[in-house]
Image (cartoon, rainbow, N blue to C red):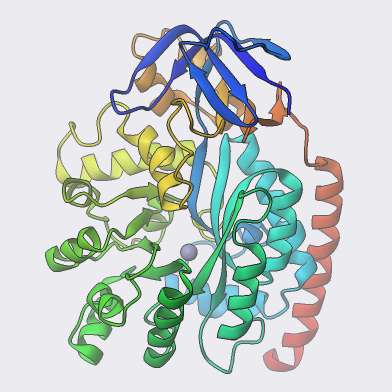
Length: 440
Ligand SMILES: [Zn+2]
């Protein structure tokens, strides 16, 4: 790989001191940052990039999504969560094809790269197709094959099949892919299935990505059934004995927070989805105070409608300040950490995240010259509150440019739109013929 030197940029490191380096250089060798601010004397660049007037910062991580669900964007609006799923989404998903997952994921990837996302934690079906899309795109990803653990699941796979999927993809694409178990949730999966999943995950050192404690009703059902909250139940069944991502955890009590902190569980909050479905306010300030790694996700486009991490960042802050009547919550660079380095940690990419020597070169270049940034009294505030996806100019993963001057270099946008449109037409036709009889 060529040695790269990025020069004259304003570098937002998101290191432990939140250092911002004016007119700074970054040296990249074999995909790794070998100099940040201070460039080694013997570093001989093959390619130099003058980034004067631009901001370089860590790439963003979408730590919980169902990328292929771009096909359901706007398909099931203005419904409570149970009706959203039962009346609209599962009916559409009954006609889901591998083809739809491939093209739907690529469409999501275009939106994410354009918005400065370098990696995402995906939880869905036909995950071989997602792996293919991610490999082509050059992004990083966590791949969890969603399973319900019941016979009724048509597109699911068994535990042995999941193990072979994980073995095939964990660490693939030069380490850009991580594969893990994706049991849907404690309310969808049978008790014995979850216990078995945990046992295998611990034995085989496989991570877990799961939904939990999304609604107050789920918590009540869990208490009625097990005398345990969903978080207590998952801990009791052993699901936190490995690297775990828990999506949502909105209705976590104090005991739950202690468990999550103690077991080093990564919590992913998805503010748009939480608010759109009136699910409640995740206890992010308490989670952060108890040492839990809190990352941000968009959830799927079927619920969120967009995959815009800048919006999630802002909503994460706004939701907490409004709920607590406290304008000092999640100040300064805190939201940038949640969307960047905390996401990298949640996805188990430990050398990604902050722009510090020896980390991989996973970074974005933000153009802050648009009028909606002026003036920039406080760069962290401008990045958090003013940035739109279109302000992201360049995206790099492991030293490879995925986007330069807003041109995608790894994905052919018009080919994806064509493929996506054709797959969607086939899926809608298949779904209609499937349900014609049912609806009569
Ligand atoms: Zn989800």
